[in-house]
Length: 256
Image 1 (cartoon, rainbow, N blue to C red):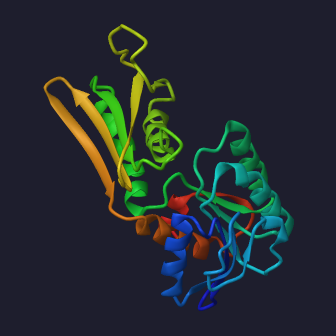
Image 2 (image 1 turned 180 degrees about the vertical axis):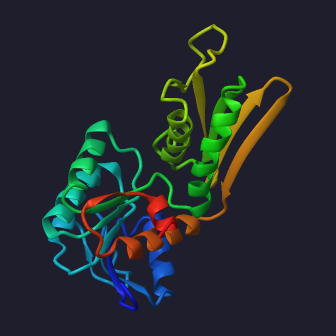
């Protein structure tokens, strides 16, 4: 894009992440929000806000989405119709919606990531190496994620992405276990336990635990503010503008 300013539509502009990104972009000369979309509009944003994505008629180079899973279908239809690339950050999508994401990516550029932070995406790479070494040595694998008490989906999309990175190295032979309270039996070797904690204002904590005989290796990531996700989304929007149809992720952004 050179020195061109990337024009974005902020989908979910009045949510916490939408407002975080609005503030970050205000301080970035390389990108601007030309319109917002949110079910509620109290008129405080420095750009026009539409209550439905279909009503937005403002030209843009990309959409950044931090909204709700229920809004994803209309968003994808809009991006395909208008040929506007989409940075899709909303989590908790159903299997049917994930299929629609893949279908849409055949017609327009879509970048989907469960977590936009640079640290998490580096961790996804590191976990593959750790799994290749530790799983064959008999280490059990557990994931614990912690988030604020307002988060509605569990486990987090990031926890599932971490589990998928591990399981991908194991030919997807391991099953995910979310609750052991109803079963009285020893832990199976080929399982990945995923636990969710909800409380307070925790932005996002993820621990991937490799527990072996007499030693434990833990990979931890702590997000101390939502800004880490916003910065990643802004990077992604700049990257995605002008890209051909396809399904992209943060590794594409990191690797340029």
